[in-house]
Length: 195
Image (cartoon, rainbow, N blue to C red; front, top):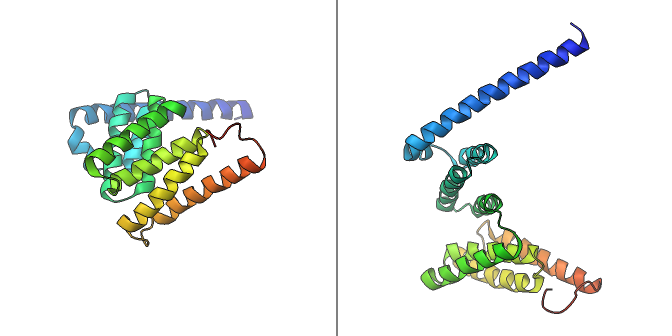
């Protein structure tokens, strides 16, 4: 068999694998739709992330968001805030949230949590971090820095200074301080409002 024949055979094998994978995904989607809670309650967080990604790639966006929300709840129960942030960013990407819209949504979520659960609730702490990241990504570095500083202090008090998530929050704060110092030293800050 020559090189060209090997390429054709390899491509055929890949196509067959893709067809088989697609059939498996279609069966999984069918099972998930008919037995939602039976399926989801037996999956670990990472498996839910992979399933959500597969559904997203297959165009099953509403189902992917539902799976991601289940994953987020699971990570929340396990106090895995980093993975919760990952899930939130995947949901934001599906919903096309970015820039000012993401900031507005995250600000509203945080405000609602402050009203209902208070500033020192762990959900509010996470919402504050998510808002801080969205603010930083859209250029509101000073506000992000202030929010991170406030949240780090609250998190240390509420979660304890030895909680493994604290260094991540402190790293976010340090990063925003560095960004702000860099912007000011480069004279790239246009006006005092968006730095």
